[in-house]
Length: 413
Image 1 (spheres, one colour):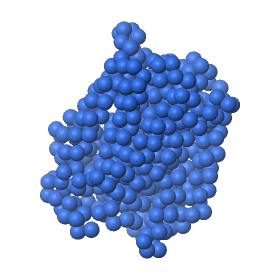
Image 2 (image 1 turned 45 degrees about the horizontal axis):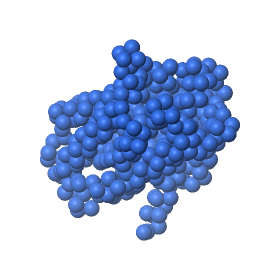
Image 3 (image 1 turned 90 degrees about the horizontal axis):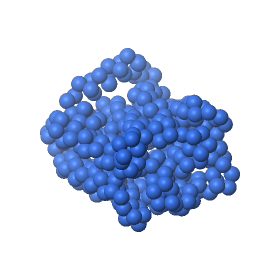
Image 4 (image 1 turned 180 degrees about the horizontal axis):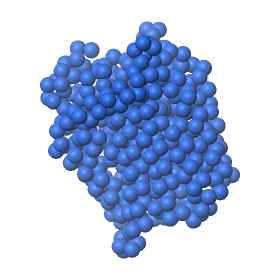
């Protein structure tokens, strides 16, 4: 590996540390849910909104983060915004009302907004096109180490001290990630001053993106794929195991760690298995159907062992979602890559917020409908995934010529 490659990998790993903390914050609700319900008397609907507030704030700012990266570069953008992650975590830790919890989550979501986008843009700009799926998969896998923090370690902190101490610990880790970026990411990807785009020009560029007929189908699936995994790992896993099967908080944390390990392994595995631009969409369809089937089975009244096995199965199969990033990269010309990634990431995390909120509504409505809570939750997730897949398959896709050209360039690289 040449010195420029080593330097690029070092900077990417440091940027991934910020992404890892965003992964920890977005999945904390799965372990925080029981103590927060006890402390504030939260209903399932309120719990869903609490978890979704992070993702609403995170997703809503993706377009502006994309513009910030184009104008100011990766380093300046993440250094300017990421401190709000620490502020938000401390606001949440000190909250004495439900409104305070929501405010803290929203601030944390804003702070984390550039965390993964800077990684995807950095990879697109600094690594060969043929390596994109592989490197992006590795980044997703490494960043998913953050999921481990919100398994057993967070459960131990909560049981030993309190849920407030958990948020303080996450704030401390986020501070260290910001400091590492400040000290070690020296290069920036900002355009030269004379070439920097203006805000209105950037917004017109997003309009150009939405005028392309295949954008809607890509967004339709993006809304529900990662949202399905995050709704399981980041919200409902802990309540499911504790309420339905009588697990302790630490016991549910152990399962969360196991699911997180599979979440780390899956993206790099599927990044290496990526079949290329021509066949990738068929693979995405097949693995989405597999996830739908697994969630539908989780909705059934099973015993603990098969339920946990199905959750772990979702953890490994969900790694295929890394192929959606490669699909986006292949579907648009190079000058639209940053904006396309920003729109895709926005859809993905607004989808997480939407699904967590809607599954909270489903859980609250389940009792009135005489449906078991988690049957309603996982049945709803399977239905949303099916809707996203229908949009992806039956709305216009990228022109075949562009996919073939992408495949040829990938092979050449």
